[in-house]
Every structure is written in structure tokens, then in C-alpha cells.
Amino acid sequence: MVLPFDPEEVASDDVGEKRATLEMNHEDAVEHVREVFTDAGFGVPVEFSVSDLLNEKVDAGLDPYYVLGACNPNMAARALDASEKRIGSLFPCNVVVWEEEPGVQTVYHVSIMKIARLTGIAPDDEAMADVVADTGALVEEAYGNL
Image (cartoon, rainbow, N blue to C red; front, side):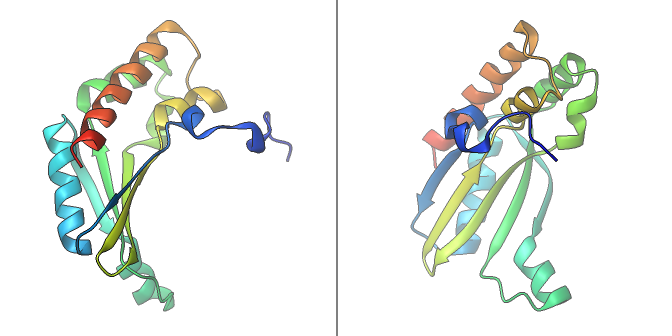
């Protein structure tokens, strides 16, 4: 398979990559991230511990790793309209929290809105650009409060 672009040329801003470090235990970090994203206008309809699941199922030996599936209903509806409903295959917008070491957590996110445009799932037009900008502002708000 040949990709339609060179992954080495994709910058972190092209995919809306965000990263923060929190100095707290894992459970407190997950709760803090949930609260901050909720305060920024996201709901968290889906969440699970990847490490618990994989450690139980395949004895993966993973350190704490948690996924919060964040969603802003207004943005999701706009993105579905702009993408002829295809972007729903990427929902929800995930924010992950993993333990780097005890007491140090990484919070990581990429923009599914930007990735959808980059891959052609969503159009590169004004309507989608507005969705990207608006969701980006919400994510910036959340990361600013981490």
C-alpha cells in the first residue's frame, strides 16, 4: 500500500498533536483530565483502561494507560454534516493518559478533525476548516487548564 502523503513530512501541528505532563498519580490525572475536558465543553461518553484490558487478556505488562473518549455534540454534528457522515468512523476524539513513571503522567491527543481532512475522510473546505478551528479552540482551552 502506498500512502497518499509522506508520513515523515507530516508535522505535529498537521494532526493537532497536543501533549502535556502532569505530576500526580495516574488515577488523579485521569480524573483531572476528565474534569478539564468537561469544563471545556466536552462530554466523555466512552472511557476505558487499555492497560487493565490488555494486561488481563494477553498479560501485556503495561503500565497504567487510560483512554477518555471526549465529544462535543455540536462539533460532532457539524463534522458529520461536513464529511457526509464519514468522520463518525473516527469518533470519539480520544485523549489518552499514560504513566511515564510513578507520579508522572503524559496526556496526549491528536485532532481527528485534522486527520480526517488530511486523509480525505472529510473535505478540505471552509465548513470543515471552521470545525477544525472551533474544536481546536476547545482543546486549547482544555490543555491550558491542565
